[in-house]
Length: 173
Image 1 (cartoon, rainbow, N blue to C red):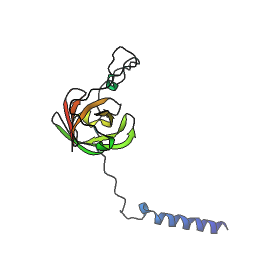
Image 2 (image 1 turned 90 degrees about the vertical axis):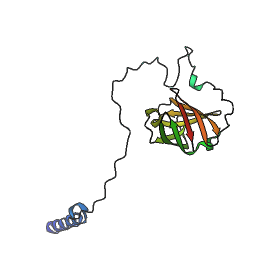
Image 3 (image 1 turned 135 degrees about the vertical axis):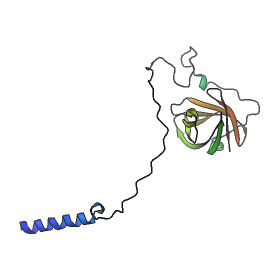
Image 4 (image 1 turned 120 degrees about the horizontal axis):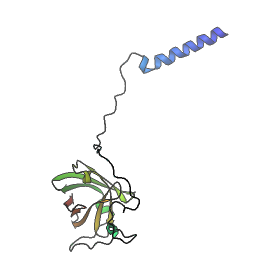
């Protein structure tokens, strides 16, 4: 009886080993996945957190609960009315010599709707993660919710405005 069990066990192991590609002698392994490009990680010392400091993207007005970024902004003359579906899809971005692509989705995300960019050399533009509408204004935000740029529609295919640092920016198809 023990001999039959030992033979059965040996045969089972032999079948498993011969069926395993690694031990079959064949070099037909699945090809490894290509590396995914990522943005470089910055280096440097971080400042200590100040629990009383205003949140990123806000300006401390001295009045608790006042957020300048959320304050109503007066649209320039000629700014067009826009809807969420007008923003969906691919766009080209031009700002300070940087020419890259932006993709706007209608998937809700903290701070608005999902967005991402490709080919941007500016850290601010490459960090765009969300977009939102504020009346006639399109607001581009980074992953922490800070405002990257504010734009207005000058036509159905063109938005112009400025980044949070005051640099002109255009979004167009």
